[in-house]
Length: 119
Picture 1: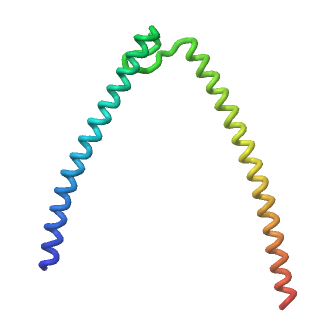
Picture 2: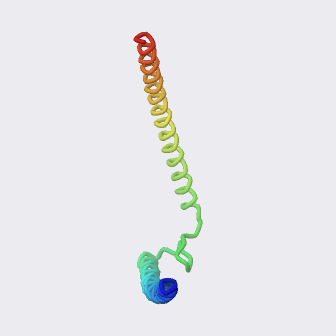
């Protein structure tokens, strides 16, 4: 019985200490994250002010206009080309692997026939 009582006490003590440490670490991470977000926002505001560029809304997202639409289309086409290249490469590798598998199957077939002939 004493081992069970000691286990329960240690379990609850560990849970309490762990929650305190977790809370402190969580608070520190949240504060650091908030300060990093504020820095990024300040940099963006300074950049907009310095360049006179008003293509950003208050949250820092770029507002859609004709120029960004063209840039999006160019990026989409570029990604489609890269996907096509990747698919072609995947097909080539698949063909090479199927040839290797076919050849290894033939080798296994020959080895099993030679074992049959030996016995």
